[in-house]
Length: 247
Image 1 (cartoon, one colour):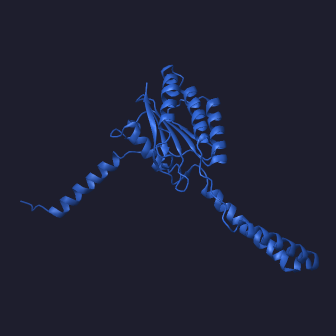
Image 2: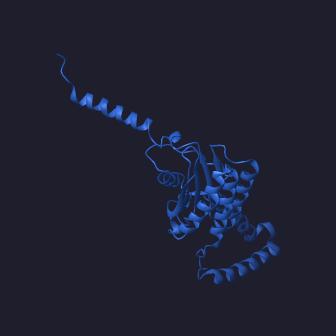
Image 3: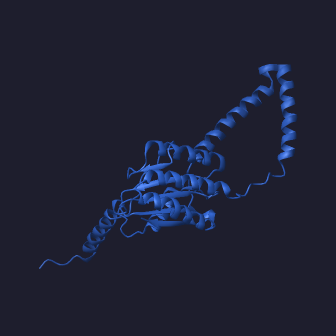
């Protein structure tokens, strides 16, 4: 009889278990490109509503730094999420994408699973559960009735419009200007005068021209860094409440 190789058999068993778990691991939709604020895998959105949602979301993100994302999926099972509820999957998707930012965690996600006949509004952690009643009103008075009529696109558009109003009604904390702003403005004005004098006296051979070139280069890198770190996905997390509904 061939001897039983315990370490090798255990390795094969563990490898098989790993492959099985990976094959059945929960998956998520791909993030939308920067020009869109929705992923419509269930094909629920009409073109005009999708355009309006993009416009609303882009304006809110630009003015208040609050992202709204809409995701429609055929079902939870289509993403190997049979062990998830609509609430747990929305929270997992929110965290997977990092909606919002760690510094300003006011992201909003509307998830619709049409096959499960369920929807979820998930709010970023910074909301602190303060808008659960608003989310429930939007779900019960706008989303569910529209979905029962078969108007998925109109219901989603109306919900995004309402969520935009909720976000703008929140008294967000405004950062105070640091103490050095006024002295810096005064020094900046004096430096500008000195640069102008240098340019008049020595032109491009003076230190003023070199300073302008250095500032221009620094601004280029600062603006490029700001552009790459902005947007809807900056490491935000769920946990700020929300509401669920079914139809």
